[in-house]
Amino acid sequence: MRVLSDAFIPELPNYYRGKVRENYDLADGSRIIIATDRLSAFDRILTAIPDKGHVLTQTARYWFEATRDICPNHVIAHPDPNVVIGRRLDILPVEIVVRGYLAGTTGTSLLTLYRKGERTMYGLNLPNGLKDNEVLPEPVITPTSKAFDGGHDEPLTPEEIIDRGLLAPEQWATLSRYALALFARGQELAEQRGLILVDTKYEFGTDREGNIILADEIHTPDSSRYWIAEGYEEAFRNGTRPKSFDKDFIRAWVVERCDPYKDEIPPIPADLVEATAGVYRTAYETITGEAFVPDTSGATVLDRIRRNLEPFFGTH
Image (cartoon, rainbow, N blue to C red; front, side, top):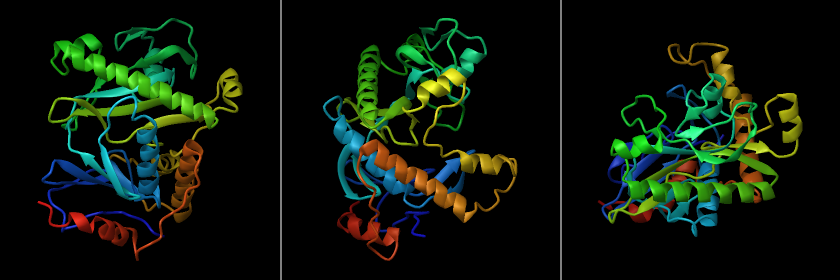
């Protein structure tokens, strides 16, 4: 299988390795971001999924182009299917999640908190009587602290964000306006593809002039929850989970066999890896309406990326 597990290129400067993406900072203030095929969960790398990095980069590219009239983004160029050249930004210390439905599984999700009996959260007041996976009266922003130091995110209200000095009032106003407008565009285009954009995460940063810029990725299968529109109403009535691009079966397979936070992870079966790759490819095609065509040039994916990034070699 053609798979990109690592993307270290010694000819490029200022290397930084993230969980999934590998980064190189250039002297002109831009950044090379290479999306590998690594699958991260439980604070560790489980395996690598063929074409995952390609799918994430090109899905984000579709959405960056479809929303560039709403807010500026960090994209400068796409020299390779797995690569984006972006503006280097100072990432803002607040993580923005926009939610259109009472859904989620994490400790900071609306559904988790609502099930605990909480009705006031994130500066919001939710009514009694909402059901799992029910559409909210209107999309809402649920900000959390961004734990750069490996700590846990915590829910924030707009007042706390400003009082703690995490964002200036005008920054929060701009960021909120951008996030809700991006989500509205995402829901509109997703509906045309027979999808429901349920919730999504956005990351914003500031450039040298202090302008707020959309960074990282947007509306990808990793950063967003999509449901298949057909069948949602029936699933909601029955109290079952709506059909989605379900990539969690690798996580479930691991949990059934070990404690993923303490034990050694057993090798992931090849058929499970390929099934997950199929989910990513299908997600790309459904979200964008375009056929997924893998780029098989080069002896390996890394060879192809090296060739396409040669113009940046020695750029210190």
